[in-house]
Length: 92
Image (cartoon, rainbow, N blue to C red; front, top):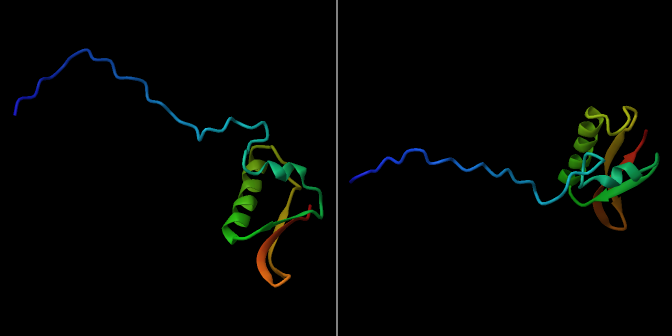
């Protein structure tokens, strides 16, 4: 096998992709509804992982100062109308 070494070939710039969504002024695209929640409001999720994602997002947004330190969510499994799901309330 013969290999030819080529010299002075510029390396192209690496393309860093975003997920196709522009940056949001809120610091999140998926959880923009958090900024519309008042104390006592709740959101319903079908999966525990979805609820956990919202709660984790609050921690990240508080860390970058997009949400006030007093913003708190609480989650609980609920059975309503024969269906079981996760509900997340804004409590502070």
